[in-house]
Length: 62
Image (cartoon, rainbow, N blue to C red):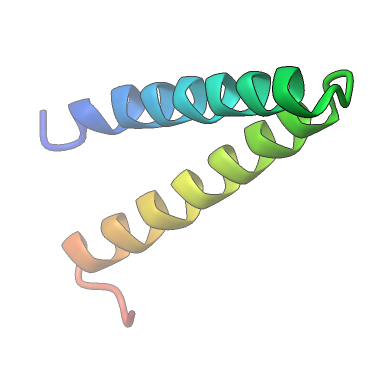
């Protein structure tokens, strides 16, 4: 149960970044490229944070 919220955190973060990307695409008229970049940025950033969090909780070096 310790890590039950991590999947929800990943999903919510990804949805928020995609929505921000879609908003930016509408404002800039870029046709979806900002949405794709925002999705990758959100996923990568969240994975980085989750891995650091898991290493810290498990007694990792970082």
